[in-house]
Image 1 (tube, rainbow, N blue to C red):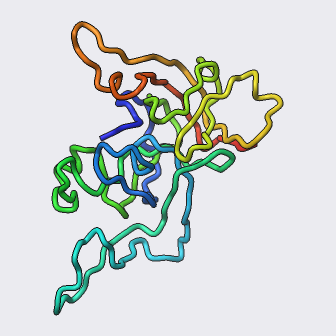
Image 2: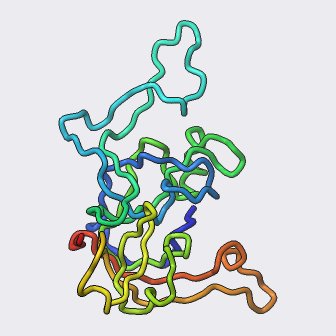
Image 3: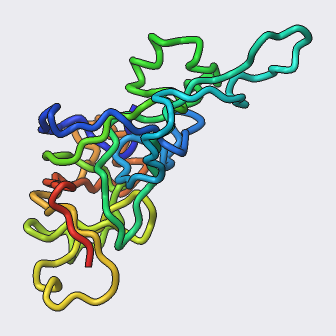
Length: 222
């Protein structure tokens, strides 16, 4: 399930990192949080001296204080990322949502098929993060300013964690403030209801979206 990232995308699997887990999990598929797909992130914990998988008590397991219970430990990846903000190095964009429950409130821990249908991973599991490629972002992923989202504008990390914003090419020199430049805007559009058919995203948001090219490997902060 994706709230910030539309299906059209072009990227190579060689540019995807599958080592880090999200430090934030969304409660349900409709949650638009920093556990969603389409969130720009940075590394928050990168200690390779730890074991590849760690085990600890977790509230996600539910009630664990039953008598004679041998162990109640939940596995998780020790390397983690968090939503990036302006002026910080960027790892990339999340391709899956970190999710606790489905739309009916049932834990996805017990329904792996539904988890795959929702294109989600469990809390503590590694999330695929794309470092470069072409992606289509919903307006929920962008702090949208029309003048700054024109084609060829730079794409920069927003002050709102996990989101991006446009930066007019003419504003690059000189720059004032904190910026993390991660790519550029290729094209923009707006989803609208037509021919008697309602567009879900046009009805719940402004319907604007953008096709962007990102390269977080070569991104820079100023």
